[in-house]
Amino acid sequence: MNKNQNKWICAAIPALLLHCSIGTVYCWSIFSQEIADYIGFSKGATEWAFSFAIFFLGMSAAFLGNVVEKDIHKSSLIAAISFALGMAGTGFFIYYGGQHKGSPIALIGIYVCYGFIMGIGLGTGYLSPVKTLMLWFEDKKGLATGLAVAGFGAAKAIASPIMEALLKNLGDDGIYKMFFILACVYFVMMFVGHLLLKKPAGWHEPQKKEKGQSIMSVIKSRPITNYIGIWLMFYINITCGLALISQEKMIVKCIGLAGMVGVISTVSAVFNAGGRLGFSAWADKMKDRNTIYKLIFILSIAFTGLVILTSGIKNGQGNILLTILVLGLLFVVNAGYGGGFSNVPTLLSDHYGMGSISAIHGITLSAWAFAGLTGNQIANLIVNKTGTPDPDSHINPVGYQNVLYLTIALYIIALLISIFLVRPSKTDKKAN
Image 1: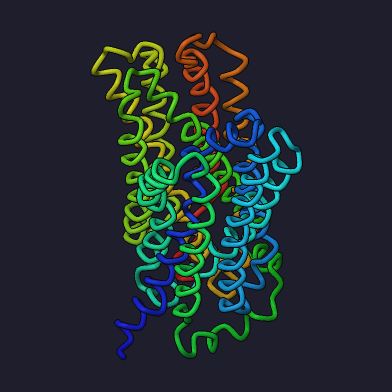
Image 2 (image 1 turned 90 degrees about the vertical axis):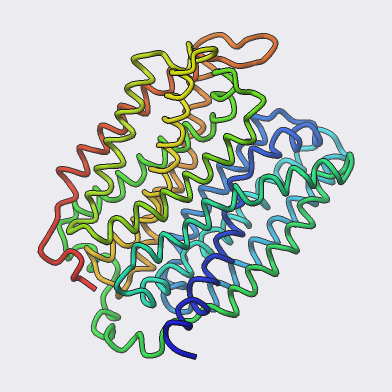
């Protein structure tokens, strides 16, 4: 088997198997209301399961980054077992909640399984293939990592119609049965990915000198404000992305496209995946990879500003131009959200080298953890506290419009951080 074949079988395919499985965490909105109704709780109460999943994704990546650095076989196996076990456990507690309506045991069980146990699988599964890809695709690191995390973004587009079909065809108890079925399917996919995932032979030889360095000493090899800047702009990009993506379904209803929610959700997921692949591949051709973040923030500010100035969400119903503008905002934010993820590991490797990249990337993913607790929750708070929901459709155009004032302010701050804190250096793109 030649090296060209190796990099697809030992890196790209297993990365897609892992990321296309764990990326289904973003399908939460497909079944969150069904879970709430089935176990007898409000949708708001069950929403915390998703927030916890994203939080523990980031925190497990931060704390288990060294495990991934030392042994990708152990970390990818942990990912497969944790993710499948968490999904099966979620199915069990949904079943229990159906038998005991309003039981706090069911709700807490879902938090633990979907949030904590699946979260560990998400964090380790997300990290495991990334460094391997960068090592196999040394000349096109952005394209390689973009390919992997595009699988994470595309998972929603692929899995959403499958989940909807399962819910429709499995009967009244379909919600917990679906979780049991998916737990088995995703375990098989991730276990195959675990078996295939391998680093290039001899990859560790050039890294011996770096092995003795602590993570903090590697980070301090550049001005500490440099790393703080990367962490903050990553956090802000995710927070803004989650604030809008979590409200996407209702925003689409506000502009009069309730009947096309599923189609638009799929198109958004395609933009999310396309942004992950496109922005990272584009960054491979740039002298300073941070330029991509500047472009993402400028595009996001421009589209958000236009929708604010035209009150697009409030006035979009029946107005084709405003409808296109609002959809453009959703698609741009999805693409920028995905592109932010795919460029982080390669930006970090340009600045800090490849020796401890899994551990540094893991620590940086703690930004995702905190954004998971703040992004959709702050958006929900703004929507609930401002405007008046329609009594029939429950949509609140004023509230969703007001979320944009928060996101544009944060995008502007992120752009300033990208310009003034994350400084290019002569070692960028040569550090590895």
